[in-house]
Length: 131
Image (cartoon, rainbow, N blue to C red; front, side):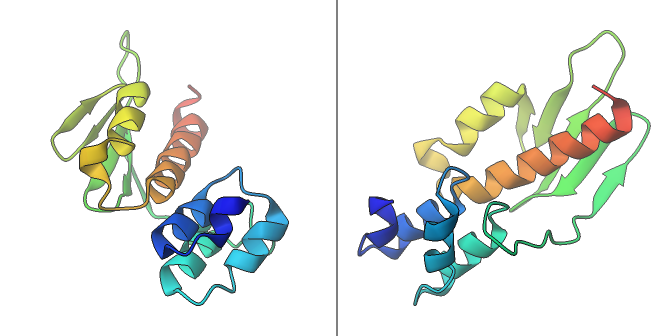
């Protein structure tokens, strides 16, 4: 909650995108003076009145894909292999992708935005492939 009152708009934006930020704080952040903070709050599914954007997925026999921040993000489904992700030059597990999302070298976009994309991809994958 204290981070939501920080003077740095990037800190407030991260607080607005965090799924653990309380709903009443998200309401305040949705009225912030900086557009990036309002945008992060609007994209947080825990913000009261949140309406999901129409996420477009590509679905094939072996993968589900969604548009990410810079690339299409894929989650692959092959027999006898644990599901794995590819995105740009990345290929690996969910844990490794999350590590990359939060990497100090990869902070050009709000990590909360990328986590929402990953969660949407996982939900659709489970709906399509049941795993």
